[in-house]
Image (cartoon, rainbow, N blue to C red; front, side, top):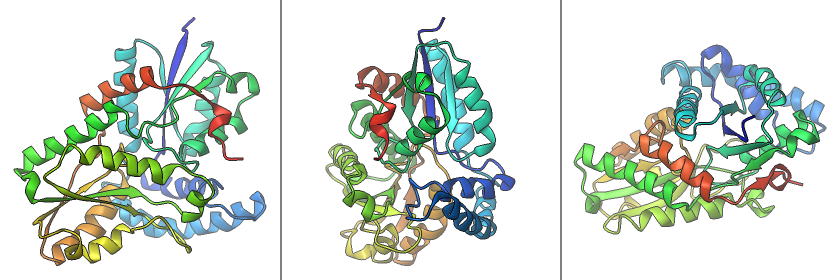
Length: 325
């Protein structure tokens, strides 16, 4: 019997245009993401309709990035590489790909391993990602199985993550011929409602910690942390990426080149491939600066090498420790 099974968990983006609507429905009916006081049944009806309406618009965005998100294939690639590196079973879970859930649940229930070590592809903790998956497990598995899960909560400042991120930036600067002293780094993290932070979510603190650690390696550059992908009414984490882009000359300190860095995204998807490239970078160009985007860690060998280091160094968390009460 295998002593440890590893589990890589990620957001899960639609692989095809047909999966856009079920993806959005699973996302928007998750009350860790959209928190309302409505009973779950009414919440599901309301946001199921919102998902159906938005799917037509969002499908156009996915068409522009190839007809689907690369998150699924990138996550599966990383898992396969880790099977060889760890010499152990490595499973995957894609939170908002409901068509994959039944097979995943069956696979977990059939495991004989006494321990399932869970690695989230989210460097910074929030109840809206890592916490949502922990809640999903609590809902779909019996206590005996839940006790097997041993989580890496987050790793915003782990040396292996910081080194991977800084190496990705260095590789990009070398590839483009950009000089550090000419660059303004725009670290764009996925946003969260400010209410989540006010209620105790660690996400903003951990994003800032990641930003601070990475910027230490680029002392000649200028940089700013901002937040993108605001959805719905209410105040979200600020500054908003779109606001910074619209006023980039007030922040860039006469730097010629604006380089987007996806500090909270380990996989490229619609937020980087479409939102940054199609919505934000044109605003930078309009202001007379030259915009660039550093690709996410994706399938980089040094990122794959970093994951076992993070696994080895992390103090395990139980599933219940990651659930918002």
